[in-house]
Length: 500
Figure (cartoon, rainbow, N blue to C red):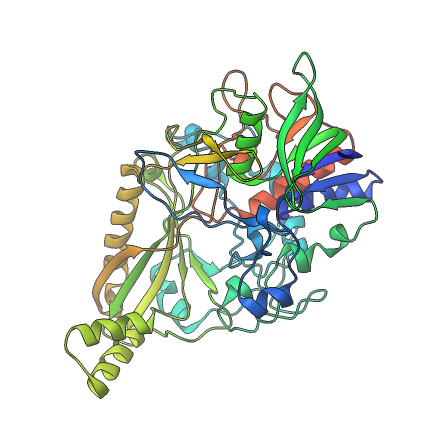
């Protein structure tokens, strides 16, 4: 058996885990970080097009709960986590995203508000090299200058106000070892390593002498004190050889996603009623708006540069979800249009001309829609175990609610009306990407509800924190990465100064 010890033990080496470690390390604390995957450099990722190293612990370990719909969950077990492949959208939450129950009578309020996170949003934007973040109360921008709006952005901006630059972790000018965004629009695996990842943006944490990064190590369960009020150790399995590893620390922080955080709690007998419940993913909708005129497809300084706030907030949120609408500068998938042309009997030059014309005249809008927390969407433990002897994660994820569906239909109709001066022929709502945001399952609360408090400390265990997107009590229509980062920086500062 291998035994490790440190001031703080962190499970997970994604953006959350590394940012929680950041202030602790700089304050002199020692940290052991556990990662079931391994480190794979950006150069190695480019060579084979795969983000995670091919090691046993990197394989997905979840199954779909019997009787529930299938769902394509998209995550990485690796040093750097799922932020290795996110495309960079980094908008802040809206003020009312934290007050959904108070303002609109639905969902759940956060126990903290926008003002509590504002300075940590600033720091997260600096760390991630976000281009186009908001101007602060001091008239300055914590982030980099925004990318210029694309022709498609400028075309629709007058009709979808408020409209402005999209905050993204794709820098508009060089930062550290990262060059400015190259505009290739393949941001999931940036060819020049410009888009933020924990590997290129948090090197100071990964290389810190007080950090012990233990790779290929699965955190199996928490060893609790007799009164179950403290964690005494983490019992682990080394995935390379199956040997047991024990980690002892004064404080423990779980930063391992909306699947792994609740699973580790459940494997340890920490089964508060909300543990594993209220799972959420942003299921995107692609709105294709066919115009009678060119839409500006294929031009822009980055994959996406502009965003509409027209559907972000308002009294309608008592009935349907808010939405964050982003222009996809490359436009629609030309190959799919060409395939349809061939299916319709067009061939040769006629098929090509038809496909190119449709591509030129179609706006591609990525619509990210808010959903309400649903208890039946949940993570539990499977009776089956993985190759390491650890119960698999069982996931039940029901279909979208009326709150979501009504938002999609309202936005589709609104786009047809608002963009009518541009000569709208048709607006089609199509399924977009899904499975990349594993939120909820250990949400903030108090008393008998929730799993952690406003500082992400477990409600029953005094030296245990559960961080990241799993602590979200409500979800917003904005991508979660920047808010996960802000919460992690806030927690790191609190732990480093012993305020929690």
